[in-house]
Length: 66
Image (tube, rainbow, N blue to C red; front, side, top):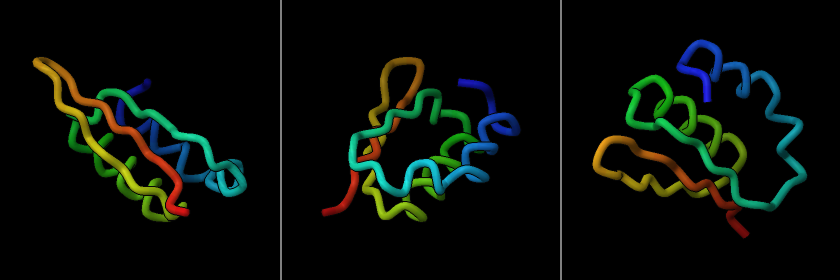
């Protein structure tokens, strides 16, 4: 996805995700601002997140807490 400042827009649209229960994947969470954004996104929506670190990049899987 887009880096930091553009990705931050997802936090302005949390209501679009409140009624969903499917997993959400964020790429490039090796970038510090992007990691901070997904952590805030998942916490505000009551999702768990797991960060998977690869050789060059990292991604996160966010799943709804039931």
